[in-house]
Length: 78
Image: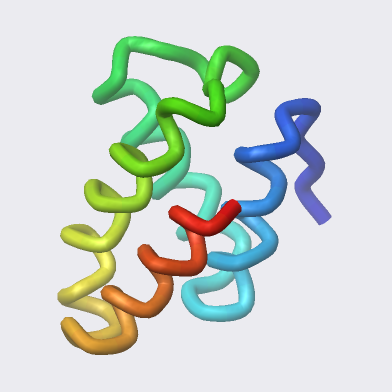
């Protein structure tokens, strides 16, 4: 299992991986973190709401809008 040193990213990964698989979860995290101009290790609590919203947008195609919104809400609560 993938392990991140950043607790926020680890929690997001733990939430996403059962829904989309580990490979896709890692890809989603990497691409959304890069959009912020950061690395996984650099993510702060203040970045989490923005990450949640961007992840929600990407998940709509895979999970539908309702489930994607619920996942984003769980990420924002981290």
